[in-house]
Image (cartoon, rainbow, N blue to C red):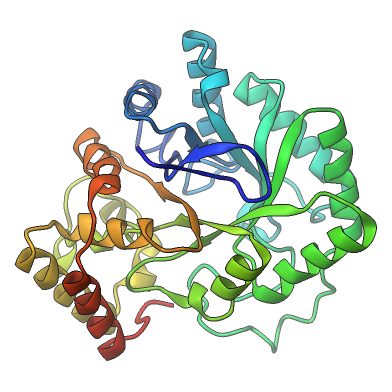
Length: 346
């Protein structure tokens, strides 16, 4: 395994992070335990979860993933071997079954205390805001929703002051963002500096060979402001494994069970790009998944690559991507495809 540090901290994390959002729905507790056992054995010390998991988010499965992780901590005693990240759910209809009202002091306190209880731990190493409490272009929205994004922005000062209170109590160690924009990220950094408040260490946004929009502004913020990207959906919800090409609908696959989660990656342009990347991978005796993950692993603004798998063979292949070094020829081939079919997925 390769390791890096959460920006502006001494916390060492594996370059591969174990994603957990399928546990409690597609994966059982037993399977979640098996994944955590294997990942830790392979040197993965960074786990990412969220209060709303598992996904799709429903009242029945709310907190299910955190409970599985908490039960594993209790069974194994491995809490001190893991850098644990979790998130408070954003607002909107999707999480109306959790709470409403945005990132208020009361809501943040409720979310943190609930996660700590389910996770059976006294602290969370990295606590993240799952998505902004305002209209932004994420989750498949390509363009900024300027016609509807009239809501006041979050109270950045109150949010950071509240997070600071929990850091002083030792209940959270570091803080981060997720699904944020350059403006939102810089606003948090500005507020932190002006008021001597906790500084956001990371930002968890989507990035893949067919969705490189992070490079429009956010990659420069990452490099110049030292706020590391935690990549989610590096395989575009499995589309970049190639299993959905030519109308494929593998039994039990995420896109087969929940097609709306891969719809943003299934347009004509995306399919052409996936075909091209697969041909490139085969030419160099790689799987498409290996190509896609290894490319992300070597990016200078990436702190960790969050992989998620429902099957153990997928997990093993994904973790093994850390050992793949892409040649200049392969990297040039990737950029040639990107130039021809740039960011086909929103």
